Length: 74
Image (cartoon, rainbow, N blue to C red; front, side, top):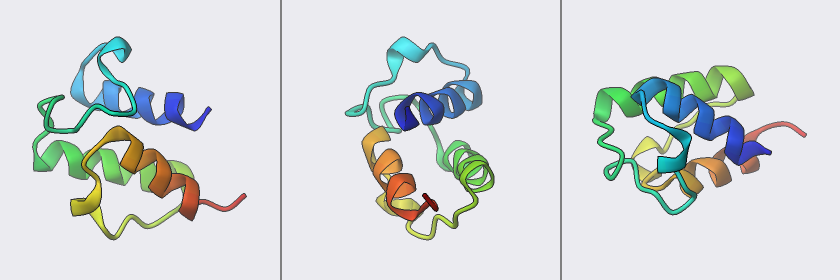
């Protein structure tokens, strides 16, 4: 499932446990700074072959999941 894949990227980047990440969790709650978010975005762009233009709109994990879902090729 897409959520699990994205959660894995986030957990690896931030060095946190997957139990800390839900769809409603915000990047701020996870302690992600702008550099962390930038690195997560780069990894997601490479993994799903998409461009994430509106990084500032990604507030929650669900925002990231929905963005990837709507922009990746089926």
